[in-house]
Length: 294
Ligand SMILES: [Mn+2]
Image 1 (cartoon, rainbow, N blue to C red):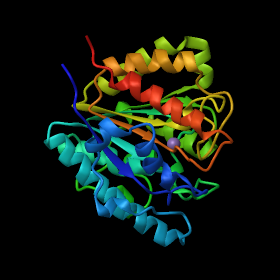
Image 2 (cartoon, protein in one colour; image 1 turned 180 degrees about the vertical axis):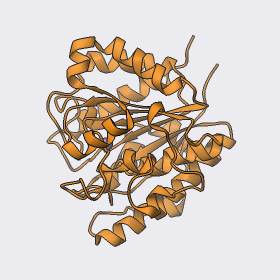
Image 3 (spheres, helix red, strand yellow; image 1 turned 120 degrees about the horizontal axis):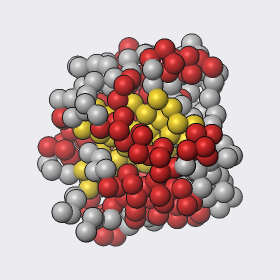
Image 4 (cartoon, rainbow, N blue to C red; image 1 turned 90 degrees about the vertical axis):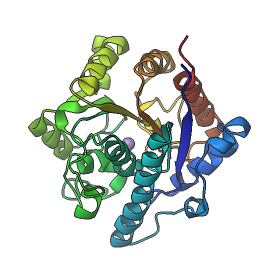
């Protein structure tokens, strides 16, 4: 059965400390997702405005709230029109809207599985975050912790429940987020776990968590999950990430798990000496994830 995808861009870097992510969807649209996929984009004038980071924190929250509400609507519309939404960051604050959009469309708040592939844990609140950047906080907001405007992005919140959440690839994090996840019983597979268990076992365990007792499941990939050797152009590169072979094994398994919505975030065309390498990686990610099953 072939899948129809609908790309939803988030030309917004207001959640990041460094500018550049807001250019990601436009660059990817013109390179990786060019030509034949062009008409698969929602790309209206509202979405045509890149939003950078040079604002006060109050203004940043308003910008992210505003933009994430549009993402909620676009994801909901894509699902209702029979598509699999593919949200493209922009910084990772996009997920506050995209995951909520899936939950709203499927009426599945707290029964939405979320698989988060990332070098970071994105579980900060303003109190625990050293950088105060909102792209380090989307998972906490989806769990109900953070700024009221962003927690209450849809009516039925919190959007996700800790037992349906799993994170893969973590290697850079602070005590505050670990404390939150430990309190809530969230399952983390850090890079050490991948080395110890092997990527296949990690993905099998992760899929059990996001599919058990849920109505739908969401895959959010932060490009920085992969090693900077293969993904240098990201907002916050961290060494020791997922290598190419493990990436392929992981994505092939994830493709077969039929996620209801997919996300690729944090590509930053301004970062890395050779951002063509990161575009190639994103192309590979997409080629694997979009391949129809036989
Ligand atoms: Mn992230």
